[in-house]
Length: 497
Image 1 (cartoon, rainbow, N blue to C red):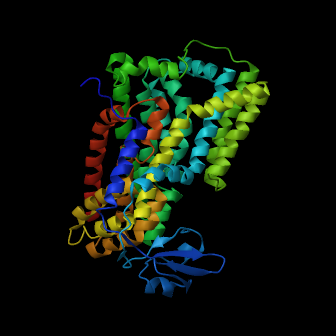
Image 2 (tube, helix red, strand yellow):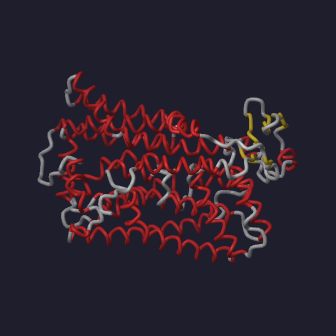
């Protein structure tokens, strides 16, 4: 049995895509009508499988459609995507997806995910350029010297900062850029690559799971539920701090074992391969030249500018990608890299992350199969009926579990919010709890499953460091179980408060 190896990330996703294709033959097809606000015409557009209607953009229209959302949430741009209209689900003629659709799904997924794929490739090119200057090696060596004996500070600092990004502006896809940068720092601190992946990925997961002012989850979900986003924010802050403490303690205990005895590492047999992948990080002091310092400064500023643009300037993937492209060119000029060498190095760096880009595209292809097979809304329809007759505590826990299940099929937080909240949030009224319970269940359910969700970003993240999904599951499952139990207890208690 020793010769049997765990499938690659790409193979895992293709297997999942095949299973979802089979589901389109089993799960009945169906769809909700959708409603979107047309800002230009100041009208609502109601779309069904049969026709499209233009309706007055008034509160009376929303009330007539049983959409319990204030009109201003649409008119001021808080809700800009199409939402599902309650009580409009209709069964449709089945559209089972066949072998041809399965084969085409990764291609469609790559096309749909082109924005993030290009971001990943350009980041790869930038990293190739900065690595070729030697500035990154020098910076890592210096940082390792500064942190000597205080390496635990690195774990706390990275996890907290990434979580802060997650809770404020949904720092998720952007973390892909940080693995090639920070993993060598963790290796220099005598930790293994799993510690680095955990600090970045778990930090991002906890931050987005316990979002406080994140416009892509908390705010859009609260708006779609018809409540103010500040409702329940105090509880989410407490949840954020609690889950962060639990996660950091867990990561530090593992990291300390690895630092004390490298053979305790779950990926010990890969240590040489990973060290070679990240340039066999040297920890001796390397003297910075002014040119290297300036190159490293430009490199760091790319990320600072990206974060500022996303938070304050409403940037998205095109602007982020352009920032990294300009940064690579500026570094090339500073380092006096020849034009032909620059192109070759940039292309090679982009090529190093091509596998990651393909994983993102294949994962997106799974959602394409479900959308084309018309089974997403059917699953939402039946999931919404599960909670009938439940008491408050069971309702809160069940809703968290439902959202965890749905996130496998709808990994987008904003997409999940606008599609499900108009359907799910009114269920809170029938049970006698506040609608913020449903918003919390949406966040916590998605956030918890995100830690192990193969259709999310974990496979792409692991691919950067060449760590298998099975190794990640071995590392994360104890923490995952602890967080699930803790979350269910908190959700049950808050339902009665």
